[in-house]
Image (tube, rainbow, N blue to C red; front, side, top):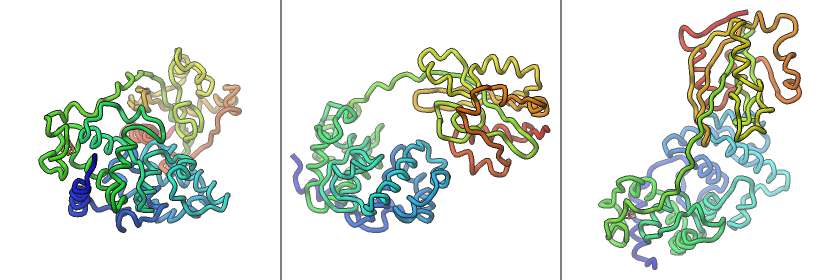
Amino acid sequence: MINPEQRDQLRSWFQKNMRIAPWRVSQPGKRDPYATWVAETMLQQTTFSVVIPFFENWMRRFPGIKELAASSESLVLQHWAGLGYYSRAKNLHKAAQSRVQSGQISLPASQEELQKIKGIGTYTSGAIRALAFNKPAYIVDGNIARVLSRFHLIESNYQKETKSSGTYKALSLAWLSGSNPGVLAEALIELGATLCKKKQPLCSQCPIAEHCKAYQQGKTAKYPATLQRPPSIKISGALFLIRKGQTILLCQGSSRFLPHQWGYPLAIHAPYDHFSYGIKKDLFKNAGSLERELSKKNLTALGKIHHRITKWDMELNVYVLNVSILFKGKNLLDQQGDLANQINWKWAFVEDLNKNLIGNLWRKATKLIFKEGNDSNEN
Ligand code: SF4
């Protein structure tokens, strides 16, 4: 099915054409397992060039599992800020703490053992096994699946496979079963990322084009089969800048969308037919009525921001509240009976906002709020 000549072509193409990156300073197969874990986790859902400065910064601050485990979650998230999908950083952090607690600082070479570590799935376990331990592994992500689907004319979708078995896993393991599995793994990843592109693959430059069935049969556009994405769901709401002197009110847990992040008070409009259980966690149970209520009390509209989190397509009105009214006597926070019990809140200095607000949603809001002409300093 895969002959040594094809593996040789792939290996030698990669060694001449590989992109430079800080996680590639040593040969694939001889990499540091921890650095490989970090790099491959960052590279999920984030492009190669974007990851480079984040990886360098991370490795400077958390050069090993011990240093990562000893850090606070907020510091870890600060170093992830801008990469999105923050559960990846939290999983890395929790997994590092759990390794240190159990006295297992080094990572195992077994793919099954690697997959028992929080946040490490099929792809990352295969990458660590091949790139750090130079062992054959099954390793499939969108890039590799595209190459395999086209090269072998596989109709199925890799996302429907189980964690450890399926056509794509068997094929990737077969590719990596030649000498130098680490180089072969990275070569497949690189081929998928640079030549075997989703649209208009650069087949004329491909080292294995003469054996690629889709290319030879003129069918590259038909492979791989795409999964129908669920349609996005539009939701709207309001986001509030509540300012007291040089401090801004921040909440944690004001929305089910970003439950662990510190952010501005946020309310999503009712009705919530399809996720009504989430309403109770929102800062203000019905943003519509809150906006009507507050409009009588000097609520200033700054504009709108749009943001997408998975399938949720948000449109948020951004407002500034006049705190001299809100905080006269019994304030709004006191009036929201369950607020204090369900939501953490604090006053943060304006200059500390970037440190506190790590998600792109909050950063978009900050940009709008502090845009020239919008900044307000009401007391
Ligand atoms: S020949 Fe084209 S379609 Fe086939 S593996 Fe190479 S880049 Fe992908």
